[in-house]
View 1 (tube, rainbow, N blue to C red):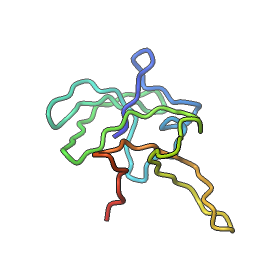
View 2: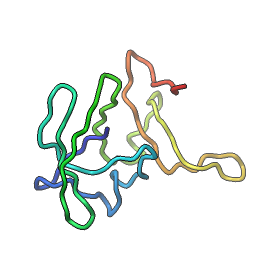
View 3: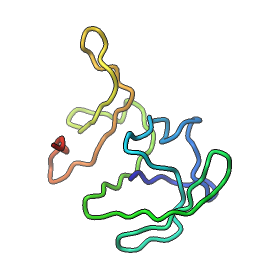
Length: 115
């Protein structure tokens, strides 16, 4: 779950693309504004590209990752920083990054891949 700031009460696209310019998650999802939240659920107004708005319930648990994401440039990446890079390899096997995420360090370690 990615949390971002609203602009004038609306969740706006950044740079004309979803997810602050990052590719959409393969897990699916939507853009919306939280109307209410309790211990395990939140009510969200979903904003369609046509300007429509519908409400849905989102359930979460102790395994849900919450991240407050904002766009930064390469200066934010420093030695020792954890990164998760995504993209495609060129013919020489070098990753051509489309996304570079900087996850939170937990207990002094970078997140490990999940099985």
